[in-house]
Length: 154
Image 1 (cartoon, rainbow, N blue to C red):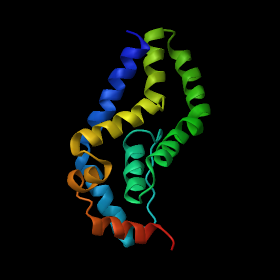
Image 2: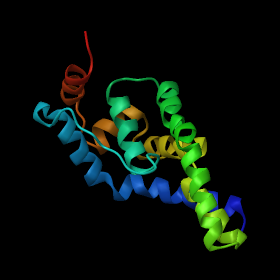
Image 3: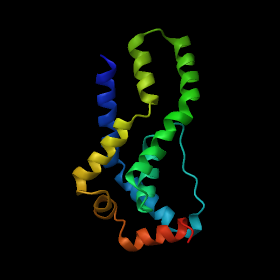
């Protein structure tokens, strides 16, 4: 079992996350649409999977370009580099099994291919990012404008 096998399957798992977590993303959007909930902190240990996708859809709701959204997503890799090294050092104290270590490393990685897979799935489901937000997550133009009003300065 090589890293390419693991990466491919992790990428598929992350794409499946878009489908199985749909109700949670809809709820997340409802939370950020309510001014009484703001400011809102959403986080996790890694920030690249469910939380990362919540950030992606928020940025798209604010009409941030795909290039800028990708840059923001990839900052996770840079920000988590030291933490991931420490964790791998710790894991090596428990096992020297290369397959296990490779798997654990793959779980922590932030890759452009994961971002691309999420975008590809959005396009597959709805044809465009905007249509995905509207048709799949129920983010109408009015809701999008409200998010912009709540989050952006004039």
